[in-house]
Image (cartoon, rainbow, N blue to C red):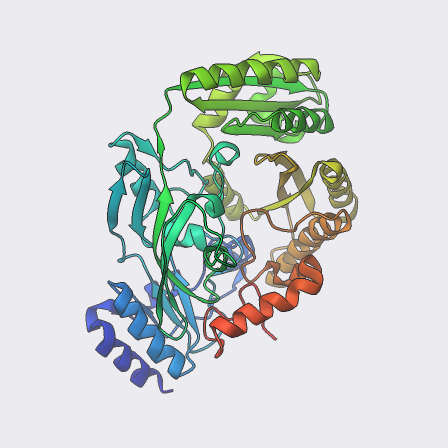
Amino acid sequence: MIKENLISEIKSIVGESQVLTDESTLSQKSVDLYALRLLQKHYGWKPTLPVCVVRPKSTEEISKLLKYLNENNIPTIPYGGGSGVLGGAETREEGTVVIDVSEINEIVELNEKDMTVTVQGGVFLKDLEAWLNERGYITGHYPQSIDLAQVGGLAATRSIGQFSTKYGGAEDLVLGMEGVLADGEIVRIKAVPRRSVGPDLRQLWIGSEGMAGIITELTVKVFPKPEKRWLQAYAVAEMKDGLEIIRKVMQKGYKPAVVRLHDWLESEKPYGAFLNEGESILLFLCEGNEAICDVEGKGIEAIATAGGGRPLGEKPVEIWYEHKNDAADEYEKYGLMGALVDTIEISATWSNIADIYEETCDRVFYEVDEAVYFSGHSSHSYVNGTNIYFQMGALPKKDVKEVERVYYQMWSIVMETTLKYGGTIGHHHGVGKHRTKWLKEELGSSYVMMEKIKAAFDSNGIMNPGVIIEKK
């Protein structure tokens, strides 16, 4: 279709003022916070620009838009806060239309009896949290992207927050939702505490990353503001010692809001004053009902000290809390210096997680000449296992192709080692258009189910082409 005709038709649906074609907006909405691109752009990489960015103001407008775009086979990318880190919102095809949902942003209703809040998909998480705080509630969901992320995008990427060990991830928090399918059909899933009426349709939306449609409204759990917090940090000799303490805490039934284990390299700068050389640091934060908080604190303390943890007091946890969202600013700074920095999050059962951590670190430093930093921490734990959040730094040559080569070399080591030990290659950042390379091996024989879901909900393949399922 001729570009001018396409733009004219879209304007007739949503109004002229809601369709943006200036180069600045097109450039901004053609990428997200994909680390590879953040560095490559300094060396001449240019994004593929969409035809236009559309800002509908209602679910009904999205429905009309998608119906038209689907009938005309126009590639379409939903865009939220742009905080994704795996290229999920990156425009890669000529003729693409970006649908920016930021103007669908009402907080619809707080139900204090049911302890739920209903919000539209374009509401920023930080705004929802502040709104709830004024009324005595919290979301319990605190990703590092809280200042940028919108609730619809968080659900679409199956997000998790830094207090997840108590409150859960997107899959636990979302009770009901509304969305628009690729053909423009509006569908609603009512909010109930549990259901047994076939497969849980919420989970076809949560983690879908725009491959089937656009999430426009959610009903999510809320929690009362905590009465009390209990904080304690411990030094441990090695990561495996800390992992064993966390395993015992989780399998005893305790649910600290925060449990973090940082290896010696990550611990050196922020916590070095508290640690002996080579030690790792273990941080706990419990919150909620005062009586429950006290019991959890005592139980955790007994397990941690019995496991060889050396108590360090509250201060290290306070330091972490104060700086918990600083990483994004640091990454931008390092990028300007020519450093390739990124994070890679995986998870596995307790039987395998220590092996994944140790072998991955060894391989990166042995195999990647350009690697200057590689560390890991555990920050989301469960009865059956935990995650490792690797942080990487490298100094590749200042060339688009060289940056990409080093980037994929480091990523491949993490993916290969995780798959070798039966872990999952992604814990909470999603797949995007980057991790598709390894998804067939991750899903194995069940990959065909993912393809069939895509085909069933987006038969023309217009929705976010190349996300989750690699573009052929």
